[in-house]
Image (cartoon, rainbow, N blue to C red):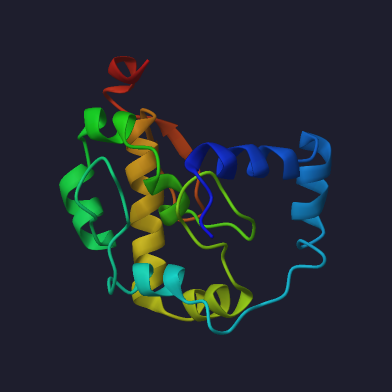
Length: 150
């Protein structure tokens, strides 16, 4: 049987730990989580093979998000489910995305096209926050138009 959206959110919140426990689980590599080789939605998304599911906008593939949403601060502000697609993590989030699987992370790290897309995702969000990457090691600074973002 399917859960209602309210029941689903209630169950997700009930499973949440304290912020300290959440960060410790992250640092420990999410002990107890098992890699499921049949789950590949994050990898397909970063390969540009599947769109995000969304109720706000038509689902878009990663290249479409990078091209269409860069500088579109209203869209980035109103639509929140893309964050967990652009930056997947090993645990369930609030939106309709699959937790990142270890085999997906390894495949993503070894694919230069996906790594470029991850960097573009990072730059998209930096721009949204009024920042810009200033070096290849990831150092950031305020962008020229940063005041408009505050």
